[in-house]
Amino acid sequence: MFFEISKLLHLFISPISWILLLLIIAFFLKKKKQKRTCFTLCFIIFLIFTDHPLFSYIKHLTVRNYSTAKIDTTKQYKLAIVMGGFGSMNKETHQMRYKQDKADRLWEAVRLYKTGRVKRILITGDPTSIIQSDGSSTVELFLLYMKQIGIPRTTFILEQKARNTKENASYTSKILREENISDKDCILITSVSHIKRSLLCFAKVGLHPDYFPVNIYDKPQKFNHRDFYPKWSATVDWEDLLNEWIGDSAYRIMGYI
Image (cartoon, rainbow, N blue to C red; front, side, top):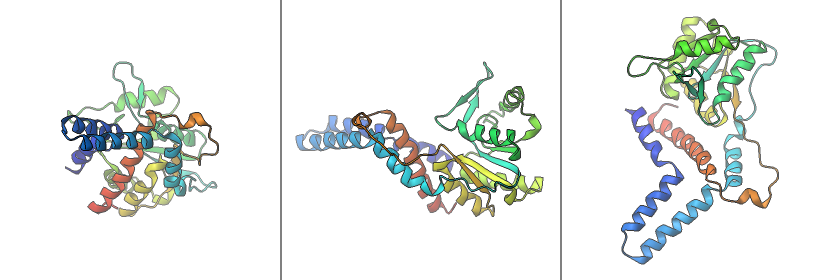
């Protein structure tokens, strides 16, 4: 139920949805003052949420405490835990389709494996392997894809049930017990905006792995006037950040972290 509610609410955290909703409301209002208020709010939302420099600065403030990897450079980790949500497999072309900027979750894990920093890779709850409602999955396509680029199928442990961060932590904990792997021998890899909630969920089940953030946001250094031109693409970035903020609050209310 929590999963379905969270997906439904996701439709209403987009600045574009807010603008459209206000325009629809304004269309049905009869009083000019009320219409003017709606149009003013639309304009303010537009200015704020299409301002990419503003987004970049706020994102930096939000994630700066987790922007540096916490890893032991002197040891080889037994397992890289990759949080899902980065992509899916195309059944017709047998190629991977990636979601926004999340592909780095997978490829940084692959790089750490290729450079000998980790022995194996656990992927938890990603559409590349997750079991769908009809019982199917594309796990074999994913493993074949990885084999074709030189990574043996035995490298991967695929957790196929988790649908949110809480379940990622819960199912991963079970796998670590089955594989007899300590959390101290693991490194968690996910987007920097998702690190905080992930670590808190893992701590809730008694796991305290090191972490390696991806999709880092650096503090903006220089701007020119063109940077402040409105960009609709900024609303997508804002939506992702708002989703993390609301997700953190919802998890605290539910007692998941």
